[in-house]
Image 1 (cartoon, rainbow, N blue to C red):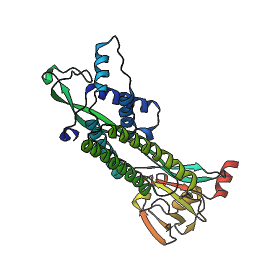
Image 2: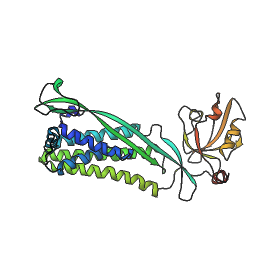
Image 3: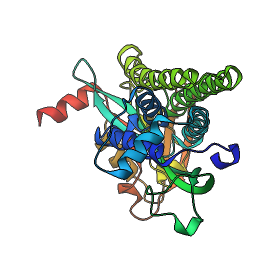
Image 4: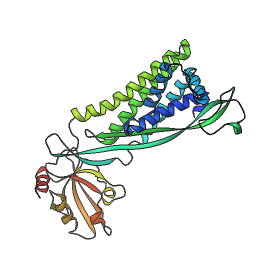
Length: 328
């Protein structure tokens, strides 16, 4: 995709970008695995790196290539990478989000969802080479020159967002729109660099997208600290936090946030009561469910073999039941 734009990155620049990505990976923070962070660090490092020499020829060549970086090409690369990141997060960021029970500030339990995804997106880059493609060495040991070869760069994109204040899909898509806006800002800086012939705009754009991505990480933390919890303890019954795909609960259409009050016409207030009532009828179960707006509905489903123990629902019980469990 990137090769279509005509942008080319020298091997030294690719090495610097790879080192920035590796540094992010060493933090073991998947939420920081973003082209905005690795790319922003790369372009800033290329702009401020001092000139120096080493005893190694290939290192000196890479350093020279970093100092002579094509800022517009790197700006195009970063824009495309940010667009890919926002697209991946928007459409697939909430696939199989993990429901969790976490402690609140009062010592009780509340529900949460964790959107945790990792993608390796292939980007084909134009790399300047001097000879025929068969003469090019193993990546990243390629020589520079007037002709170009294609190089496959594995772009790492990750998201790790703990959501306590809403359903996971709107929260993750809000993050994706933030990333899309960041890509738009970077594209504006690239346009300014092309129009005014000033490479400083690419450096400024890299700094802005880096700050924007770090701000998004802080904003997620701020939302968890200031917004009220979405999955609260139920007044009655059991609060559904999550449903396992292809499970009995999923087949019956139970969605996170709903409250189950009765099972097979028996009122339930704990997980143990839920499963006892579920086994009242061996072939099917009937649930009385209330949605987030208090609307009542009844759902029925056939119970297959071993479904009693694989209902696939994660519940949040009332405080009194949690306290009893702690005392045991």
